[in-house]
Length: 257
Image 1: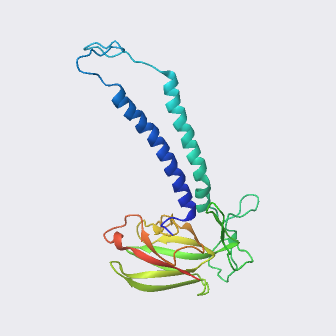
Image 2: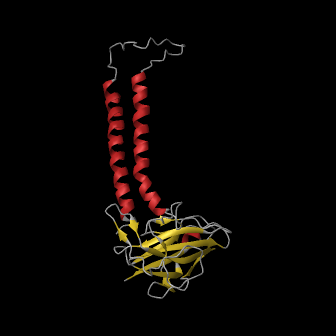
Image 3: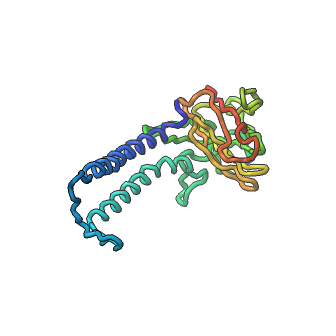
């Protein structure tokens, strides 16, 4: 498993394909014109644009070409926005019901005994998350945990969850020193309720492919679906510069069986 989840690997491949296509057209056009329109020694170059020394040249309009290089990139941008919509919607699905009473991709909070949150609850106690062919994960319900950032340390709170669903600890890692460890169960989905005690931080769980800012005085949320194929151990780093020790503000994520 790379540092991207399946949903972003598919999106990455799609963008790379279109980047290659556009590059071939752009650089092919540039290469052709660089060598095709070259003057030869001893031959007079035809003055097709009626250029005169000291006189601003006459503009040679080509409406078809201008429409083409405006319209085609616009269509491509609209298409790439469209294919990006589903992954972004999956990452930011709401923990609340919509106007029709339908929850997001992860249902409501699991009824696992924790009452220290204001999210609507379901009767299920396990998420049983599942991934479709595009990498989008759906769940029966989700568990609520808390993440707090401060210079330069992460704090995790399992919110009364049983230790087989969530546990914390400490571990010493080379370069980073003593770092907190967050242990979450595979096949379960978690909603991290986050806040900062000082400046802006941003937990980046590398192998989950997600990142969200943590702000002082404001709660933010981040989905953490622990799918079955995720790497058992991975890093969590701060992706928002937060001061002198920003580069070593790290933690470890362990996906438990």
